Length: 173
Length: 183
Image (cartoon, rainbow over all chains, first blue to last red; front, side):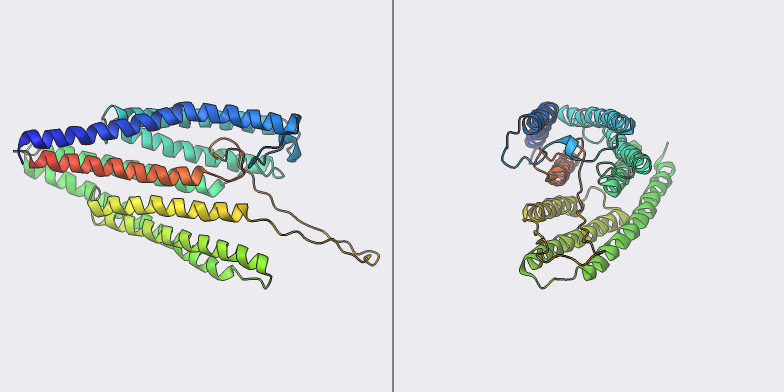
C-alpha cells in the first residue's frame, strides 16, 4: 500500500465523518425547533379544540396539577435557558466534527460543557423539587442527569488526557 | 525537550487515567449490584395482565444490569490504558445498542394497557373508604423528546448518539493508524 492509497482512504473516511456530522447537525438544528412547534400545535389542538390525534397523549397542561405560584414559570424559564445552552453546545460539537476537527481541545471542551449542562439541570431540578414538592413535572429523570453529566465530563477528561499524551509523544525526538 | 523528559509526564497522565477509571469502574459495579438486587424485588403476580407487565419490567431490568456490566468493562479497558483501542470502541458501540434495546422494552411497558380496577359493587360499611393512588411520571418537554406520545425517545436517541460517537472514534482511530503506516 503506498502513500497515495492511504491518503485517499483517509480522505474518504474523513468525508464520511463530515457528511454524517453535517446530517446530524442539520437534523438537530432544524428538527428540534420543528418538534417544539409541532408539539405546541398538537397541545393547542388537543386541549383547546378537543381534536384527538393518534399516539398524542398530552391533552392539556392544565390537567396536570401545577403549583399556582410563580415558581413553575420560573422553573420553566430556567430550564429553557439550560436547554438553549445544551442546543448551542451540541450544534457546536457536530459543527467541529463536520469541519474534520475530531478530538482536539475544542471538541473536548464542548463535551465537558455538555456534561456540565446535565449537572446544572440536575441541580436545577433538585432545588425546585424542594420548592415545588407536589409537582410531578419537576425532578423527572433527576438521577439520570447526574449520571450522564458525570459520565460526559469523565469521557471529556479522558479524551483530553489521551490527546495530551499523544501530543507529548509526537514531541519526542 | 528530550524523550526522557516527556515519558514520565505521559506516565503520570496514564497513571491518573488508570486511577480515575478504577474508581469509576467500582462505582458502576455498585450500580450493577443495586440493579441485580432490584431484580429480586420484582415479584410476579398471579394475574395474567400483571404477569406480562412483570415480564417486561424484568427483561428491562436485565437489560439495565447488562448495561452496567458493559460500562464497568469499558472502564476496565480504560484502566488498562486502552483508550482508543478497537475493543474499547466496540464496547462503546455495544453500550449504545443496549441503550436502544432498553428503550424499546421501556416503550413496550408504556404502551401496555394499564389494568383497570373494578369499582366495588356492594356498599362499604360506614367509616370505610377506598383510596386509589395513581402514579404519573411526566417529563418536561425539553430534553425528553417524547413527541407528545408519552414515550421518552430520549433514551433511543442517546443510544443512537453513543453508537455514532463510537463510529466517529473508530474512523478517527483508523485514520491515525493509516497515517502512522505512511512512509
